[in-house]
Structure formats: C-alpha cells, structure tokens
Image (tube, rainbow, N blue to C red):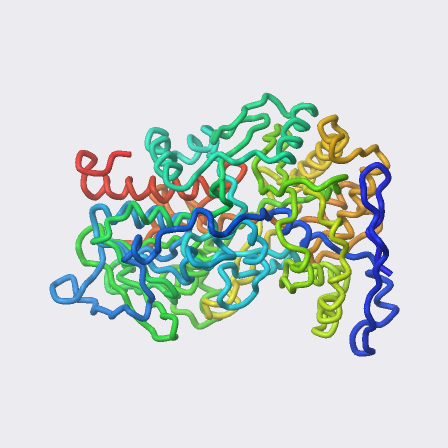
Length: 625
C-alpha cells in the first residue's frame, strides 16, 4: 500500500490509497518492498515542477536552415591538408571546439573578421521539441539515449548530473534563469568592466526576456522580503543582495531561446558550423620549442574521421569551449595533463600539467517540496533571494503535463528511479525498474500540486577532480566534487535550510499552504524520503540539519573548474606550455558567477571574441561593443 500522506495544515488533498500490482519472484521481494514502501517522488516532482504547459503552435521559428545556412552535418566536411594555408584547400583562422554557451557567441564574434569553424558534437536545438518547449524541460534531462541533448553522468559522490550535447550547450537544457555576475566578481577576475557592460546587452538583445512572474514566484518573492532577505530590487539582471526577479530565455509562449541563436550575429560568409562533429583530440606540431596546436581531429555522425586545420598566419588558434567537463577531458585526451595519468592510458604526452582536471567544484543544492492547497500555475525559476549567509534561495512550481504522461517512463527523472533510491545500486535490477514503471500509473494527480524551494551554496569551498576512465571521448570521465568536505559549505547549507523553514511559515504562504513547526519537520522528512541520489540515508537526517544537507544533496548543474586561470590557462585564457590554444568557458572559473552562470558564460564568449579581435587587429580596427 502506498499513501501520499496528509500533512496537517499543509495538504488540502488526501490521496486515495493505491496499491502495487503483483510482482513476480524475480522482481521485488516482500522484505525489500518494506524498506521503500513510501513512494520517492522527488526527481519526478522536481522536474515536472520546472515545466509549463504551452501551445506549441505559438512563437514558431523561421525555418532554421534558411536563417543559419552555414550549419551543416559533419559528414559534409572535406578534410584539408595541413599545408592549405599556402594555397589550395581551406584552412581556418579559428577552430572553436564546442558549440555551447560560450562557443556560439565566441564563433559569431570572431566570424566578423576571420574564417571560423565551429564544431558541435550534438544536433540543433531548433527542431527538438524537448529542448524548445519549456513544458518538456524534464524530458531532455530524463532522456538517457545516445541522441539526447543531455548526457547524464553520476559523480563519484553519488549525485545525478547532466552535461549538454546540443548546439547552444547548457542554454538548451537548463531552467532558463538569466542574471549577471556581480561587479565585485568582474573586478576580481580582472575583466574590462566597460567591455563587460557592452557584452551583456549584446546577448540580452537577442535572447533574453522579462519573465511572466507567476503566482508562486510572487509568493516566494514576498516571503523572502518578510523573512529579511532585503531590499526588494525588483526586476533586474544585476546581482544585488536582497530579493529580485531575474530574466529568462523563455518567451511568453514558453519557447526557449538558446545561445545557438547568437549565431544570427555571425558573418555567414566567414563561418562553418558542423553538427554531430565529435572532437577526438587536438593536433600538435611538436617540432618547435613548445608544442603548437595546428588542428583538430573529429568524427562525423557516421563515425568517419576528419581533420581540420588552422591557418599558419599569425594569430590563428584552436579554442576549446567544451564546458567544465568537456574541456579538461579534451585537453587530457590530447596529451595535456598529469604525465603519469596520461601514460597509464597510453596517451602521448604533449605537455605535463598536473592541474588539468583539478579543483573542480559543483554548487550543492538542497530542495524542500511544499504541497499546495490548490492548483498553481507552473513556473521555472524567476525569483531569487541573494543572501549574506552564503546561499541563494530560488523556487519553482507547477505541473506541465497531462495526466496520461504520469504513466510514461522518463528515465533518470522518473518516479521509478526515485523509488529505488534506497536500494543499493547493484540491486537496482532491470526487473525492479520495470515493476515500478508498471505501477507508476497509481500516483495520484493531486500530488503534483506543489512547488520546490531551492537552497544553493553560493561559493563552495569543497574541491574535487576529473580524471579519464578511458580514451573514448563519448564516455563520461570520472568526476568527484566532494560535496561538504569543507566545513564552511555545510554551515552555509544549514543557514539555507533555516531560511527555508522561516519562508514556509511566512504570511505570503498562507494562501497556498499553512505550516507550523511540526509540519515543517514533516516537509523535511518527506524531502528526505523523496530526494534522489545514491547517498545512503541516515536515521537522524531530519534531526540534524547537517545530516539532512549531506544526505539530500543534489546538483543545480553549475559545476565549474578544471582549467583554472593561473594553473592551466593564463589571464588571456591561453593554455600554458603550448602555442595557439585557448580554453574559454566555465572550466576556467573558480566560482560560479552570479546566482546562475549562463549569462556570464555567454557574455564571456562575446567578450573574449572582441578581445581577441582587438589584439589581432589593433584596438582601433577591432570591434567596439
């Protein structure tokens, strides 16, 4: 028997009891069934509460092939020879590896003056309904097929995570919240503030909007102010202490606008964008005093290998923009990294650098599910409380799918995975999953009337690392974030949960739910039961907020590091120890900028594109703003 329990003062609905169907002996034994009798709904609810019902016919794009005639499949590419710069076949001034959040604006900017090749391992976002529609947000994260726009991985900490595999990168699979980095962040990393303030609007004009500011978001906004997260900064892209409403890359029809649309700024005569082009490694000329990047090896969608080369002209470069997982992974596969680790995998060492893949960080998040006493319109993240306690408070709400979709299998974002969260991984058999899939139809629809309050650690001090498992670029590397290994992170998490406890008891919440101290404890208990990761639960995890933080940690997909400035790249993002190679993306960050990083990563692509043009052409001839 499975029940969605009524929390006194918090639930308006009490669901009817529902019963598991019969299971065969090779599926789930009665003894094991007892240990996970309570349905684990967290990931299923969380992903659905980040979904909005839309009318797909609204806001249709122009045919993407007409708007972006320079985007084509990798199999159409003809490999030139390395001597092409001296005549004959084509070589490029810049090869940008990774058509993501930074790569698209960077390539578009460089194409204004030079020939650019942009390589993207995934497809286009424009015709992918799971990517394009906000209501399908969870489906891309749940899709674990080889063709998914999202490649899931599980860190060695036991936390499910995702990396983008589509043109537009993380902007094609994220929750859409847009907010700039703080002025102090810009100053600390040494960026030109004037150029930064010219580069953000370049992005915003093309793809950013003011959100609809849905009812649940307003409740959280007003509640944050009541519990002291002030002042009220209203709608702003700026990073300011207090409570604010940020921007969104979803339009009023619920249509996503990604970094891929920044390619509309490109010079179509100077850019080639290859999709389904899987970079294998960077090619180096080893005859000089230092290794020099000269090109890239990539496979097309048919598995055929190609080589692309940069021109021999002064200033031509290979630029890696594969993200915080992909960039250190590609450097390692190309022979840049710790010598001992490379030799174990028989990778020829190009440059011995012990810091590649080191000091990785992920911003840990903990979420509290809050059931409503009535249906509430769906929303993604729109409001944020920027506290001085080391945490950011955000929220989501709603259920964007039909009742029929509850019975669908949604991969790692499914209820059936959540139900298995307490079972040791080796016992999560195919039969067990299939059994749960069959019984998911019994989840009561009213259980989806609710929202989440999210607490994210602002600047985690805990560090981890990335290592290669093998030399197959399609496989995820080994990633460890070491969540809460630093005491300050655990302290910040506890601060965040205490803010959430106050928030759910604030006056603005009374129209949606009514909670006292006892029911707040029940919310924590329910969140512990529902949260999905592979971390063992403890009996005291709602008595000790520290244990609650450790046991229920999940990700908000803001991982960064692995190619840090001063360790792997210099202040110009040039890879140290080699020539003609840069890394420009979140792998160079030692902190995630702003409350959510996508705005700054896109800005960085534009910013560095302009900087490179000015360096090569001279400031007087380079692009201005």
